[in-house]
Image (cartoon, rainbow, N blue to C red; front, side, top):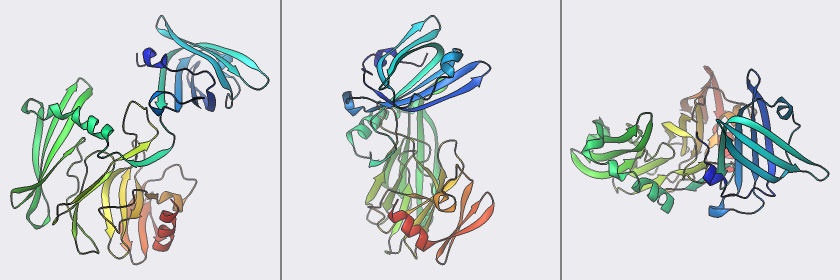
Length: 343
């Protein structure tokens, strides 16, 4: 049981317009229906959009319905009927009204503040702080999992201690406490909500003559610390459209960093969840105030691509060299700079 009827009944779907419709056969005679739409008026907490997945229903008559995109909802109700959900909808167009009724085994729904990708930096916001504060209780020896120390250049190291509170297959809270040291002496501390707090083992030697330590405070985004001044910049993107109950949405997961001193461009290797490896490129002329918008190299190589395995190979003169499904490709820096500008 994953559908929250109490939250569902707080919303009024009257007047909502269906903006996307997708139906497919899942197994045997069972079907799935996905509907997306926008509320006629703003709901609480600036919630503007919704997305339903009705999974595993057998009503083939409704499974073969025409595209509902553009229809408006005049009535929507979902209730439990035994082990199934009973779904009733009355839809209107300019010249027609129709009722749709079916029973399904599973309902999932998300309520969104926005659609698409948001680059807004959540670090330091009230939502982010609440998210961290809720988990601070795990910084206790009874939740301690493991500890390790990772060597960095020039006598520096990072000590990480992982704390985790979980029940069966779901975690309740997880924090990684990270301590940056110089010759064994603590100089900087930070928390990471995932396991990536000290993923990177090298400093970035920037064209401005300063050294920067890259690290994660979250699975998404990236942070940089000026090793000498200890000034830091943290970036955690709001990410792709996500349920309004959560502060974060999915975004690109950075696993490798490749800075080019000659152009001040930076390439990030990584991926989206369950996606193939990819390379994103951005402007890194200001490490402590960088532009968070990155450009996906695959969009230059093949704008219609649905996902290739792309891996960084090297910066070479005025080109970025990558491999696409194992085959070497070269992209001019001029083309990359132009793409970043209009990203």
